[in-house]
Length: 570
Image 1 (cartoon, rainbow, N blue to C red):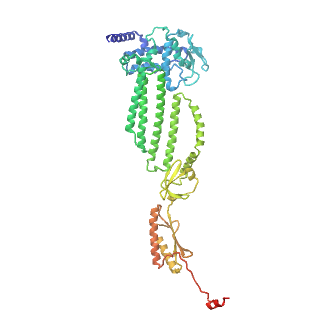
Image 2 (image 1 turned 135 degrees about the horizontal axis):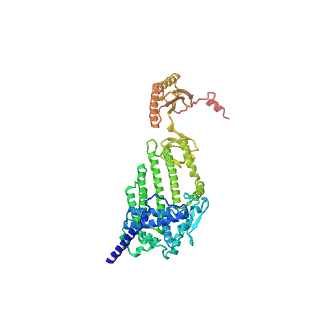
Image 3 (image 1 turned 90 degrees about the vertical axis):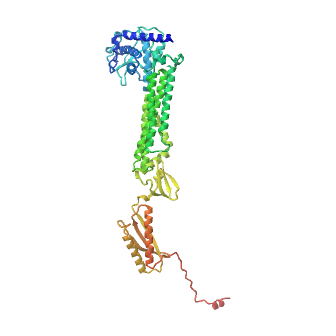
């Protein structure tokens, strides 16, 4: 035990002495974080690479001497500047930091073991005067190339080629056993990269780990793989507990319920970002395992982002529908929900397209495939599309609304629901009929709810014994009653009471008037009042209503007698 502490103390003193002995000019590197790297020529790019490598080495030892956020941030900033010297156009954006970090460590170790020519002999900008022509320089006796970018945002810059980046690990495997060509304090940046970690993890904890946990799994030490699994498990558990606390009832579709549902994807986004920071910057996974983790977290992030966008869209739509002017089951509400779903699907498609670009998926090819597939789906769902268009026609014409009393063919009832595919009508016998919108848009619909007044129309049957004076008195009495009643509308048509015909068993008297009523119960109450008054007026005229009857007349033939009949016999 004592021997172990003495070794650690000796290592610390050695590092301290080296830091004190390091040239002050190099310690001042990267004092300006905004200083851009020079990539104007192969010479400038190689010079930037060597200078940043020395500055990174200095920053790394400063971090070892005093691990904190500032020293780690300086190290990561220098690493990112080195990565900017590489052509990463062939690497998916989501993986560029991991792939670039690996390529940086590999190339630093490779170039330190090569006979790099003096910088003065490397071609500068004057060697390639035509900026529109491809240009390249290869380190002698190697396949490490620095080429001019001919397209993209970094057009004209000289960067380590995409082929060099992709083969950096191969180059390292070939030269890792060769001696260093220059004296450096770091024997292998790749080995440091394997065991390095962030300031939040105590160095003594990592040093004291068993050797088995330092073995590599997918180019990453086993302890980092185990730590990554624990972080993911912890984040997942916290999000699950949060979901259990905030989730609304399953069938609750109020706006506040969608807001509560939105809390889960928000928590997932926070968990993914937080876990990603700990895994990438503190545990510092690398290699193939880092690519797997980055790929999985990117997919999870965009799936959760699409989920959050969908719920946010539904929340906004339900919040609008919750206003008193929009019935929850009305056509306006359903069309708003349709609009919200269309906007939500479009937003999800945009999120998915952006995520696909980050993962290197050819979005244009996928969209072309979706266009062909969408045509096939449209042909297969022709009836559904027809019903949807029928629903839009109902919205444009607005022949019915939820709650209206209407007649459709032989069906008469109240509209209960107008959906995107069908409409439900509850009949007067309380049965429910579901009618496809495409059919409903083609037939005649009678909507009783649009009536501004209701017709009182009855025909009185009076017996033929009624005198003309009684008929005139009754007609005048009923007419005066209707003209004086406040519920009778007189603007469009005055009340009419007339003898209109002679039936088989009665004289027909028509009573015609419009009542100021829109709802059926109100009309029935007024109609009952009118009919009772008419009965009273009929009685006042000493009349009664005729009943269906038939009169038979029997007459005897006077020319025949029993005596004549007997004489007529043979």
